[in-house]
Image 1 (cartoon, rainbow, N blue to C red):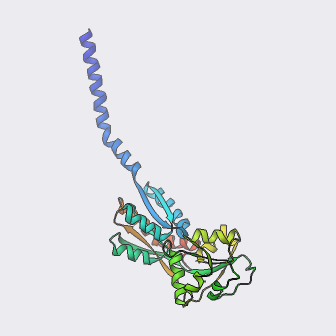
Image 2 (image 1 turned 180 degrees about the vertical axis):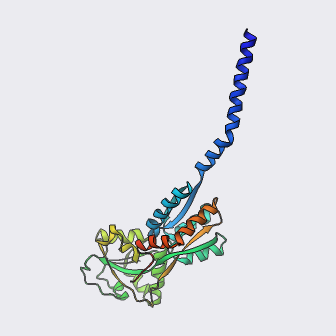
Image 3 (image 1 turned 90 degrees about the horizontal axis):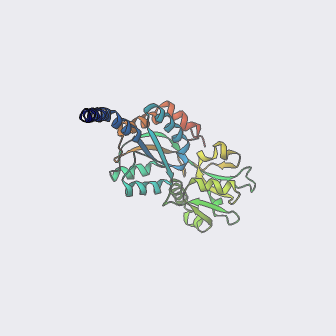
Length: 266
């Protein structure tokens, strides 16, 4: 009786083990599917349209998409150092050009435009003129971006250097920020009188009631192409390409336009 019972228990155990191994491919597939994740490095100014597109691709492809936001230069340094990630969208195509030259980007698509503008507190209480020379005026509390950390700082330096006043403005600034987010904050908190920032930030619902823009002459500030790049480190390049295709499509352009990043009139 004991021997029969032992045989039965052994058979049941073998059956359970067999069932487990038969299910392993399915279980393994499920685990792999759950681990699919795109890592997207995104300049702060573009985070809203990219988040909206990410939600669409997540639903379509059953994939998790994590967005890391920051100054474009800082993001590129992170990509170089860590050698991970799937997509990179900086605030200026010059970063994509640099990344391609270093073998970090394999392909890219155009998704929108950026343009810099001078910005003041809502209503322009100090009646600041639409003139870059106002940035030299010691009567104003001026803040600009750092050219080494973010795209707006890099563009600001280029604009002011073209106007021949970069060094003069440096002597007058009270703060040099890492990215566009801080440039918005100093105006909203009434800490600064005048900044240069990406135009798109001024049209967002959370900012438009606090900020007015003063356009910069096109000979100094032109529209900058926004280019989304596929990183050579991508683990899921086919899914990343689907993200890129959507972002570059008419549907994607409408999303970027909603956040002031396509049809720029200023």
